[in-house]
Image 1 (cartoon, rainbow, N blue to C red):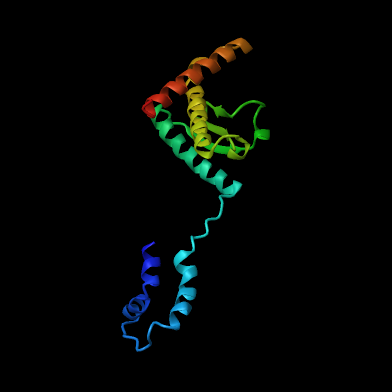
Image 2 (image 1 turned 180 degrees about the vertical axis):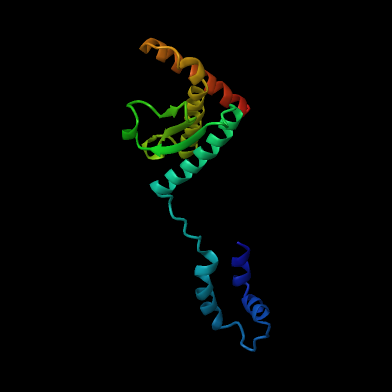
Length: 179
């Protein structure tokens, strides 16, 4: 609003003269409307903000998830694993899942997949939080490989494992977020 008052008071010439380092012999009379018209778009226009495209959201989410992968891999003591992360569409995952992890224990490599933000029905911030949960969840599975790989498990065992992993991931994230 301060700019509006300056222009309306007629002292715009003083500002222009100061900017150009000269005094103007032209009185503020008929020239003032032209100056106001000339400066109006520049002084009152808001910068154009283009919406984030789905591809940009995916790239931002992938960067965020990779950062969280590095943090949680370190926290869980999995630095000796080479874990890569991929953001995939829902068609690249089993139905009703938000991610998965596939590993090779001999090579100590793993590929962690998380759901693309395009397939979420949450605000972007909540989507990122959920993606972090998925990263932690899948890394806990990886951490349990030495213990669980020797057992054959039934579907009931897998459900119990999922419940335990969800509980641990939630507890770790609540501690991390101070909740």
